Image (tube, rainbow, N blue to C red; front, side, top):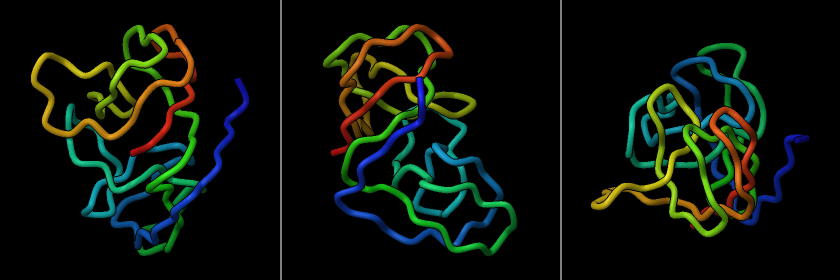
Length: 113
């Protein structure tokens, strides 16, 4: 699936680490690689060097990588290693809803906030 997005609200992240376009970015402006963390937004462009300002989608439609199977309508949280996973029984940081279904490692379209 082609990576697409439509940002309603973009925020600036002064990246403290490099990342690819489509990476989940935390409030510390680093890529998220742990489960159920607070999400500032999704990187619209790659951050190829530390200190680079990039736009992150805070509200809108994004395409990201699924970790585990995801069904349409599932509530989503950050996943270990990056990407999104279906929220468990007691999630702390749900930030999106799945608009499409996806298998593990596939692209999934999400609605943020």
